[in-house]
Image 1 (cartoon, each protein chain N blue to C red):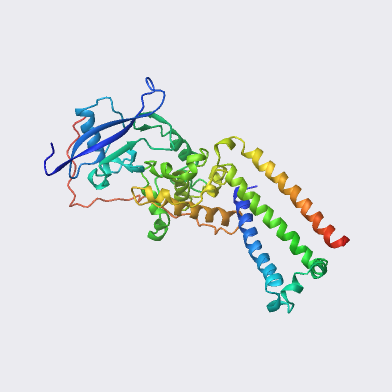
Image 2: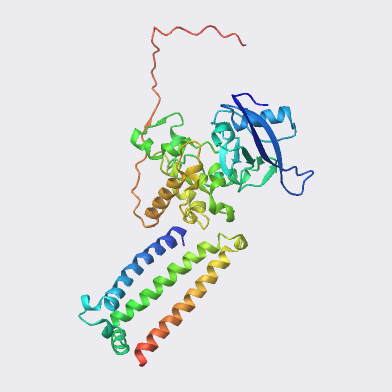
Length: 119
Length: 276
């Protein structure tokens, strides 16, 4: 894939992270303003479980996971390939980080599903 | 002893002779420097009076050829454009440009710069066969179109920006500010249609997206080019193109040469040819 598209995707993930973080702040830390709940209610385990069982909330979690993973690992790739030790190994670095990203995404998705579907 | 118009300045010059030295070392010399004397003139004086083995590269003496780039007081500068007394230090250090291999003394090996510059195809690549169909025709370009890339066309390829770039200091494969700014110069030219021919190198891993906008290249440029901005504009061009949003550019108009030409009678005829 063209490097431009990879970079643009990273910028898109940045915007997505900002939006999703904003949503997180609204629901969790500014609950009295946006949802009418108290902070204690918003952060209670039971309310968190009920919220997570909502499909929309689940999608938000997965999107956040994907965006944060892509943004973080793409940036890490940028750092690593500039180091002298990585010279001539850029493809290896890229594929290694892609694998790590896919593993963490799979694990994170599984944990999210397990938390809300089985509790 | 110095007169009131001269000062004695100590020059710390990095020396390296590949035939004799295993590593670079510093040589210290003193010179009486007068107002207006440039570092290049001081080097000439030192070579003439004290050490004829001192090596460096220079040519025009007037800031247009870009040959005399050196690391003067830890900053990449043209030696011919740097006045010694304006540096404001009693000790002036002169070293070869960093981020390049060293050939000898103050002579850098600029091959990495030339190689990377050539890789971005720094020439006009017109669409189709325009240039072949009308080889003697002129491509019309408005002043506004010229303004799009004009600043980047005054690059003298001195390589100071490449020396200043912190990314190049660790990532030798990074294309660097000069080639990337020149890639933008040609891509932005209304007479050019060669963006896709340049993609192999400029839309690649060590291309413009490894630029972190330090801006040291722009600081170092002796001609007022802003390579950092050129790189960001190149990123924009590439992004619009990758998303299919880049506006199609009309082919430049060609003005064929006039076929009937009558010189003014007021212009005198040339003298007869003397060479046979």
